[in-house]
Image (cartoon, rainbow over all chains, first blue to last red; front, side, top):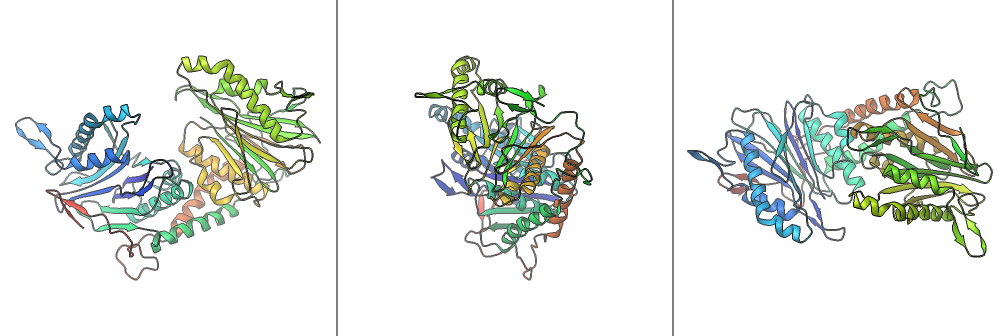
Length: 273
Length: 273
């Protein structure tokens, strides 16, 4: 499995990926899932991939040579496209090419054509854009209401993103949030693993040097893992336990409800509310 | 979908279930998923169910009349079984009976025979026991290392359980933790919904009056939802943001790693580390 996050903020973009791949639980390997495409001052693009590794590696391999026909104009590539939308189309085309090559043989072997990708970046004067690209080559774009995408094992780490991330979130805070989300996922799911690749892109920079590989000795991530668990416990303990007996509780657990409590079933099948 | 939790602690058992069922996103209904079987002083049992509603309702319907042949002895039922293990076997037998009745017709309609159940309780002098029962009628039992089970939409709410629950956790703290786990799930997944049924059983009581139905006006759950989100944000803000630039950071983000940072790919395909 895999867990990757891409976030689009007013201040820039944040990308985080794990590096575990597995075929069953006894074939675990490390493959990194982030690709960075940069032409400083012209374009900056990041691709995160999940799904079948042979498919995503093939897609990445041909992405740089993939061309979209463009009438009388030269074909569109990721290096001459004038918009991220066109880059997403090139990526979609690359996915469909790999599908044409491999899907039938995979299906014959009982393997789904399974790939999902996050593509984000900025070209020239266009605003930053972030896309989620499906295995059929179609894609959706992040908006202000839904400003992040996840691929892979996304559920464990979603609540904290839902609670913390808005378009106004500062870049480093969003990076911290992505790391907390990753920590929750690592803690609950073996199929996601270190090292992590973290990249932060500042709006309109058209390049980035904020790229780091985080392994299990990284002081910042180790601090996050320790502090988050410990402080979460403090918060948890600071919240009142439910009180069953007292009518004088500030926040009574027994309260009028539209529904009655579950009735008990007594032998021989008599239900007493 | 559904989300249910059963926890076995030294101090007792905690059960929590939601009540949303859906067939697609445009057929949402409320069906409660907890059944309570009590013969005060003799036995106390709780059943939580997830999966296809017609299957789980059918299982619940026949559970009370299901009998396991027992040689020359009278057949074993949930009301005369001398161990929770035997009750789990009766439940497994009920599941298999419904499978025999319905599975072929369901398969013909393209519907999986999909049911999973949590069964917990105590009989006589036997210790409390908690089981996870699968749609094939087989089951596993909770241990001290793994003292809780979830069924349904379990991933969103798993990290907080993993962090907080141990066999030593007090009952009301575990109930609070289950409610926090449910809150995270409600927040991230539409297919889980109020009202909730919460039941707390104290070890060796062989009965319980701590049963409550929690709807969206419940003061305690409303407090949890507000306080948890708010305090989570405070904790989040109290943790240092990553520092990219400074070598003097207490917890540097850039640190020696076994792996190099991701190289950038530059046009025309040159990779620069």
